[in-house]
Amino acid sequence: MSLPVSLYSDNGDNFIVIGHRGASAYYPENTLGAFKAAYDMGAEMIELDILLSKDGIPVAIHDETLDRTTNGTGKVVDYTFEELAKLDAGSWFGKKHSSERILSLEEVLQFAKGKIALNIEIKTEAVADELKNGIEEKAYELVKKFDMLDHVLFSSFDYRAVAHLKELDVNIAAALLYEKEQSDGMGPKQLVNAYKVDAFNCNYRLFTKKWADETSEADIPVFVYTVNSERRMKKMIKKGVNGIFTDKPDLLKQVVDNMWKSKGD
Image (cartoon, rainbow, N blue to C red; front, side):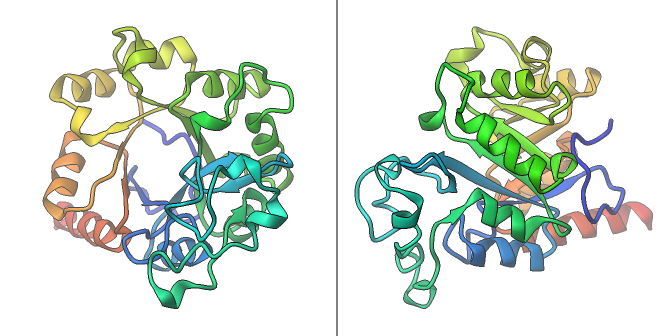
């Protein structure tokens, strides 16, 4: 089974260590500090979330509102990027992170290019029925501009976003983030075929033996979230997942290296 994206540093184990919103156990999520730390800890990919600002700029933030992770209030979409960039996006995590701010997707790509692959999750709140001028098109054009199409996996819980991406470019690497209501009782194999995607992402709790067998037989790359305990990491790797989203990329890298090493011994 081949991975849906090219890694800048691939050790050939067919597994991706993914920093969930960066190294978000140690730094404020979706910030430059968290992304840099994930890279320094040996993550092979960074996962980030994107929404649109009032002036239509894709920005890295998880929540629809600013209240939890910044000193701002209200909806992200009610502020221009210039206004968003002035907010403190770090102090909520700890005073020493007060210089962190909300990044545009363009700034994240500037940091990642030549260094680390990305999983760009398009948040449902930013998705519209129309493809034209939507978040998918804007994000796709930016990734193309930075010549990173081979190093980016797009994903979304909103299946419209994934369909839009494939409409933009059939070769774009995209994953469905499993969402029960939109799935109409379909399992991983049926969903991957129906939406013509390249990978299947889901909560680790949903990745049963049945799904493990199904995805393995169908040669479907699987990435699970969010796993932060060593025991669970080992369990998921043994189940055959191709990558794990974790807030602790340093721990996951250590687990993977040790398992890889003991295989070789």
